[in-house]
Image 1 (cartoon, one colour):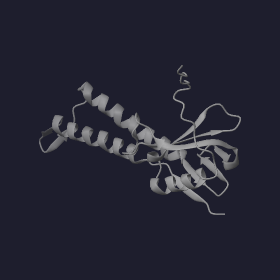
Image 2 (cartoon, helix red, strand yellow):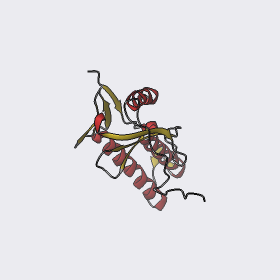
Image 3 (tube, rainbow, N blue to C red):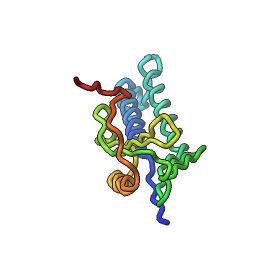
Image 4 (tube, rainbow, N blue to C red):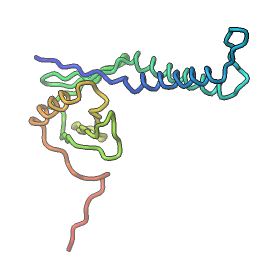
Length: 166
């Protein structure tokens, strides 16, 4: 039984945090002043407080996502959505249908790829955005392997049925 693990990407959160920190440091360097060979930072500027707020929120978001430790584990007979608090196991035999396609409105990490599947006895669909996981091509290959054993997805849009023409 082969097990493949795909970790959730945190690139965006690292980039966001570094960008906010860099902008804050540049602004602090420009607004600060050198007085008798010492650098003095001005705390009277309200923009400084706004920038500090953004930097702190970005750090908190990054730390929260690091602590979640989200990953997708695929074995021969099941998929496991793993996080720090919870593990959700889905047997491949319980999947009603699966569709591997593109999502036009959401582009994640430069990819439009989306995997949608429905479980038997459950109303809502599961969506996996491939761009959010590391080794996206390998993930698509694994999902295509699983899709061989599962019926293809239905092509209804937003639960609306087409009218029959007379």
